[in-house]
Length: 627
Picture 1: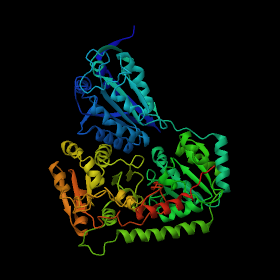
Picture 2 (picture 1 turned 30 degrees about the vertical axis):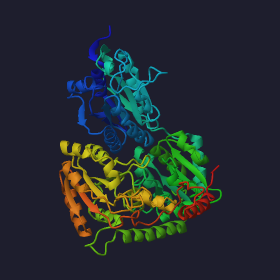
Picture 3 (picture 1 turned 45 degrees about the vertical axis):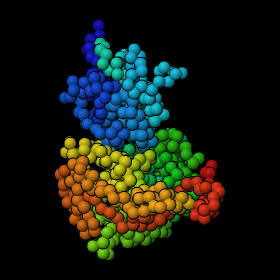
Picture 4 (picture 1 turned 90 degrees about the vertical axis):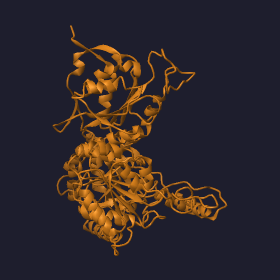
């Protein structure tokens, strides 16, 4: 007879999660490290009670906003290389729907997070309960169904015994390197508190092995032929290089072949900035060096990249007639993009096999090609130096000079986090990465408000490393509340808060597409109704201080250097606040080196829109469909 233990559904779930592990390359990790939670009537008596009951088995973090709890969990998962994740529980209603943005971010970026939104009564005896959405044509729909399209796995647990297969499926997806993303188990509040006799085998330790699939021999042979035939190949390193921990394999392959390596936002840091084959970011926010190589490449080797529009210049960047694509990717969907030759495999396993089949000394690009891109890179580095340099230390810094000041004090242990605004473009072009995980840009969803909560998650995963959240005033105002969590738990994140009085990136984009910066500045209304008056009299530094953070105000470049050094040494949450000089421009960094398709009004009377449309049509005419 099978032995059983009588527990509530919520208690059984917490106990089950506490004994789930991942393993890759002999390294074993706890799959679900902790649970974030905000409690209401949909989960307080279920998961809330269970987390107290089993506090020794499952750590708990108190959040202030449901979306930001997901961001923190995502930051933790990325820093943990997707081998360990965190769960998030909310009440029903607005608490549950606040998860949607974070779930979309996790799924788009292929990062695991486990969501437990409370749900309405499975028995429906009290319908309609507080915060319940009533759908006349479907009695089984709740607001949690909003999470279906942004989840890689979704289930609603309407009976206790349904938790067993649902939990196993949830773990399977979280640990799957191809399918991972947001996983949602909607938990009706009555079911959470219901008791059931659980088989003890459900609580036995279970290890989920994270696969490294090898390349198919036929695909590998085709890949070798493609590389050997290439005269001007270019590697594009995407986030899959980091997820696979293929950085060393890539460095060896690039060194052996001489093939230059450009990186997407997710892939930056795949090679350190001083590696001889590193040519910087690719695409709209990339370097002139990488983009010129892309225009002339005869073979583009994409490794772990999704080929987003920023990477491809909205399909205008790869100009050479007959250019071909070789796509090493663990996911077949991405491996077949741009009509490329797929090499479906784990990035590290695929690179190792490709290097082996090419053989030592069997293939290397010409010395003239190497000299060409190294000289171009040196010219670009001189542009970076010029952007970073502050000739007058007693004046207000530009945004690139803020990065330059930070560049002076960090080492390979520091981690930088950003997601939205003008900073991603500046960082992708200018930042010199010193370690494979220093550069943490969430640019799959580019979600404003991600940085501060993500920094908390990263710091939880890397407690001994300096963790910086770089935010503009726009993204800060979206979601500063997790500062309270950092203060409460003593999580010593560092926030660099840049005040440029509005949405600088979108303001610049608006101007370029004929929108005349409408609605992008944080200013008083002028007499004509536009927001073009004086800057708003807000004090974001005072706001951060009011939430419990230590704040250092920097008015000049000299002040900034001193404040950053103090913040880096701090063992409490610390914010460096600085107002930049270029308040009404994007940043002062080099302009975009590749186009990005943002459609412009096809008809207009204002001259700015008419001129923008003319330029748009010229760019559109260069777009290619690679077949």
